[in-house]
Amino acid sequence: MSKFTIWLRDEDRSTERRTPLLPSGAKELIDIGYNVVVERSTKRIFPDSDYEAAGCRMAEPGSWAGAPADFTILGLKELPRTPEVLKNNHIYFAHAFKHQNGWQNLLGRFMNGGGRILDLEYMVDGSGRRVAAFGYWAGYMGAALGLMQWYDKKAGRPGLSKLHPWDNAELLDEQIRERKADGPSPKVLVIGAGGRSGKGACELLERHGVEVTRWGRAETRDLDRKAILDHDILINCVFVSDSIPPFVRLKDLEKNDRLSVISDVSCDPLSSYNPLPIYEAPTSWDNPVVKAGLNGGAIDLIAIDNLPSLLPREASIEFAGLLLPYLKAVDKLEANPVWRAALGAFDDACNSLPVC
Image (cartoon, rainbow, N blue to C red):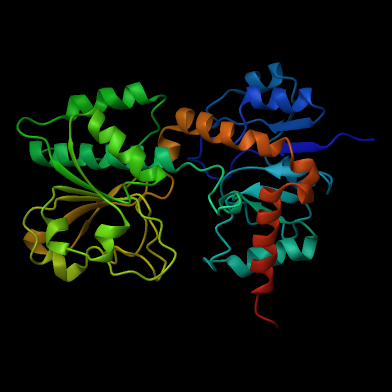
């Protein structure tokens, strides 16, 4: 009987240095009888040599496309446009089940090839809570960028420009301290402070002696936009799955004389549920900050959709540790309720495809 194989692919996105499987985790899988194939990568935060030392079979980048159909392909971000037919099960963030751009084409590639998406976002327990997420480090990094941008503005510096990942959180701390401006620290509002992202944002800010106002569902249910504008920085960490009153509108910024920086960790400008309808597209590592609003009320907006990739080591260690117990059970999908939930989400998405 052949061994069950997990194939860790090299990420197609050039800025993605995270991994959902650590070398130590790969060794644990091998020790329980799995076969682990790892594509070589010049981007991944952990070197190829660590995976080789763990006993993994190494493969060339992108060679997963020729893997046998019963191999499960593991990754994080989007797949390349080819092959047009996808025959394997793929574990990754597909960003397709909410009818995002290109969702019909992507699902069609899987349906035509017989493969399935085991979407990391839809791996949930019996209470509907995700079992593995990067939220903490997204909030942590979003708060760090917002704080650095505010310090730069206060000191009259140009502000954030082309970003590169920090090898560890200590180096990020050093850069924040170097940028700190003279005078009082900013007053920061974190919306969604009770969630994973909000917790990460609050801990980064408190680590640097910043005053934090925490808002949750109660405060956004009866929204006080004047109170929002009475802060220097807004960090949005809210996961929105339904229509809610927007937190800040363009017309609100016409009366703004204090709010200076918004870091939109949730970053969902293409959704009709976007609670910050003041911008139309995410920002990027090359251009992390844009102006939103007009004249004196304009603010600096940061809205990067892969924030945890800027701290790839810490983000990978946490996420891969949370995912590993489920990878140990991926050879028996139907027997595990979390994998059944992921399969059900894929089936539901396919069933929502329009009939031609």
